[in-house]
Length: 232
Image (cartoon, rainbow, N blue to C red; front, side):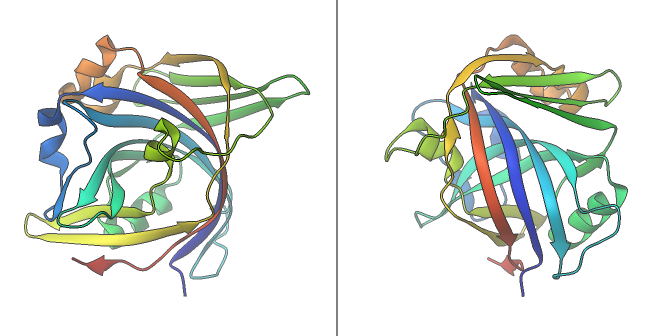
């Protein structure tokens, strides 16, 4: 039985290039940065969880909610298995934070968070905002026609990730599989990233406040399952 099932939808990605040294302290043992050059990739991501179940049971008031996360891209050392490591995952549900941090050793935090969606025939618009101290905002406008992910594309590198890794302690790493169909994506026409990264993620990430995104994507999402963790 899967640990969690849900539908992930309305996923904007703001992708940045940063020095690898910034991210190496966050690498669990047995993983390495998945590099495409001299710089490493890091993404600010928004998403909706809908029809969520834990161990196939709905949890009252925790079925539909939003998340903002900051993630980096890794490979399991000695393999071609590609995954992600989360620097922080923000929700407005304290129980989600408690369960994820306790059972999966993730870095969840609870704070006010809001999601808005507008759709018409010509464009779609998603807006996420969250409040560590001041309100932060991420807005993406995109065309409604869904596109397939091309082999070897930037979208494939960022979006086709089916494993997550977290550190239990400096010597122990857990891996969990995220199962889902290959996603579609949309053409982004405009975006606004009004985020104080230092306020949200700490002084280590103040560099992001000086950078423009290397790319911005919008993924369609799908039904997903998060499988039970295993020790590497």
